[in-house]
Length: 216
Image (cartoon, rainbow, N blue to C red):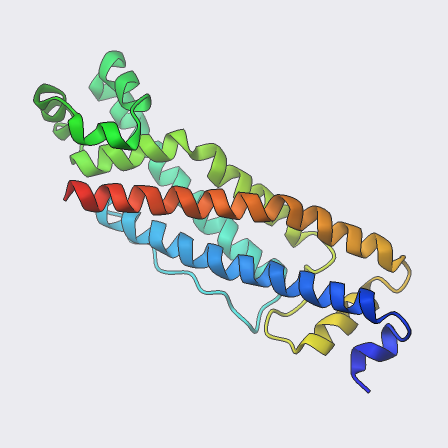
């Protein structure tokens, strides 16, 4: 008999739900770590940062991995905002506002005079990257906010690389004084916002990656 069956004997359906939700959450985290590393490469290249890649540590807990993700995204945002402040001061309100309202498709149509003004502050690619990420800042902040909630939720103390049966027993051990339905509801609520937020986050990074490659 599997270890988790001892905890959820007679309730295999809920056991399977916990397994599926646990695995989906971890898979989303893995995808977000990969997307964040892509963003890190872009920021390093165009904003001359020196961030190292982040790794989903299977020997660490969900909370510890969440903290790594939160820290990196906040570091990237801080770097982007620093360059944005320089652009805001040196480009002047008209050109700065023009950059903020451009779509990615518009960036390759920037007039020569505007390009010249931007290059006095930073490379065109850096200006494009910063303007885009400032516009998409809410997406990055939403992701970090969700990671904060996950880090304080039911699966926070679970070690990523544990076998499924051990994960389930760890969850059930954690909630032994609570109703299993409540725990499943918490998973559902977390995933309901985590899925679309992850999709938007990865989509935003993919778009700016393609655009910057096109500009080169």
